[in-house]
Image 1: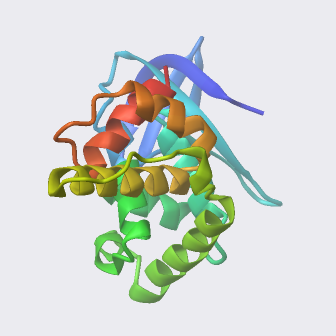
Image 2 (image 1 turned 180 degrees about the horizontal axis):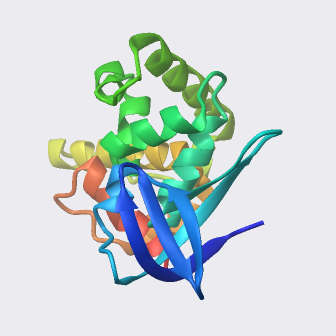
Length: 201
């Protein structure tokens, strides 16, 4: 089983990266977001997911662990295959995907080619159900709200905490990181990005 591959980018194509690792070229299916961060001839490290069937052995490469987690999460949804998952992640970052699921934003998912309203609704329904089972709000206690500004900040923190759960992080993992950050003036998406930077270190 592959965890990551480290090598030189030999070729970039439509949703494809060829990574040369000690003379062996690995063909990796990839999102547009990952491909945009790579350059031919330069070194790269990609996290790998596999899809193995009777007639196929496909590898998928991701620039970071969070995008890989999102991919694995999406293909766990009934009727969502690797191709659809790649399409969604090519047009959504992990942060915007999590917020779209949390906010029932079907339109945000249907901008991806091949993703219709029914598929988008299924993704939202199944993954929101997963959140409901995993969320434990008692782990992270918010301070008493006293001003409109504090209410807004607490709302953004709650949105970010829920969205991070969508990405597969437990509230027990996220809460200590949130407490270390200065969240003043941050919206939910900015909080998510800040937390993810700490989580992947």
